[in-house]
Amino acid sequence: MRNNFHNQNERWYTRSIMRTILVFRTGTLGTWREKLGGVTAFAKAKGWRVQTIDARAAAPDIRALCAFWRPDGVLLDASGQTDGLDVRALAARPCVALTPSSDRIRDLFPSVQSDSYAIARIAARELLRRDVASLAFLDAPGSPSWSATKREAFRQIARLHGLALTVVPASELAALKRPVGLFAATDALAAEALVAAERAGLAVPEDLAVVGVDDDPEICESCEPTLSSVRPDFHQLGFSAAALLARLMRGDADAHDALVIPPVGLVRRASSSGCPDAQVRRALDDIRLHAHEGITAADVARLFGARSRRSIEMRFKAATGETMTDALLAARLARACDLLATGRTSISAIANRCGWRSDLAFRKAFKARFGLTPTAYRRNAASGTSSSRSPSSASHAI
Image (cartoon, rainbow, N blue to C red; front, side, top):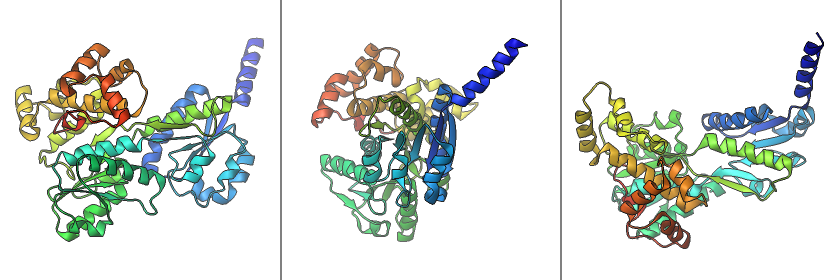
């Protein structure tokens, strides 16, 4: 009886000291669910209680809500509209901004955001493989910092390939030299471009190839044609934001800390792919999203159902010009190039994160494809020097 009493008392005490985290949401539900999944995964491991609040509805009452909940920390999903929020009311306690949309938020709080430069590189590789005559960028209204960063990264890549970048509204796309490669700051903007292209009589992707950002299935799959999109790592964004908040609560982080999370990769659909075979496009998406997990050609072949492996390989090569094994290798190398160019992750860790069982095998594959070692590639990327064989040449399909 005494043990039972002590167990109950211990459970009550644990609940009484459980940390409470308020999460204010400003972004759309489509991407928010995955971010929240990352937050709750970290919170569960730490034993935190997470309370989510729609910041747009609660804008006038943020101070009162904080007084009511008395949170130990706050996460502000600042990807949406924050102009009407009293964000300074959050500064009285540890607070981390998740994907901040304005410099005002970024200056106030430590932050976690997607790597806009890596996103622009992935979009550029997809568009440049179509041998476009011009490149265009569709900016978000007001050109917020997250959109401007993508735009300038895309401009640098265009200049590197001897192309000028035109920043245009969707209504003026028909005036550009064709074929055009269009990178839109969001999926919603890309969808507007597809509607404008149809009205102007532009063939997609023959006259206009389009790539968006976010891989929001509600938008991408409902577009006609379906929309190719760069997929950020939303789960990791949420997880890393919660981890940074934990550091801030311990006093191990400050207001100037800013984490940058690389994207998952491109989800190719009909807006940038001339491949008419829906199953092959699905296989390419699977390769792009999961190659780094070590999947094999046999795993990809299963997507085609009960057909012979040989017929599947022939069908894939007829549509893409390469084997599934080559496509898997190209996807893994493309991811490795992004990691080498955007961070200080060790070569061994990159090899592991891209699906190689050893860093020696990774180094051999990398040098065989690009003619230089991963270390040399990283050094060149840091200095702005281009190699003789660029990552965009890794594959026509990826």
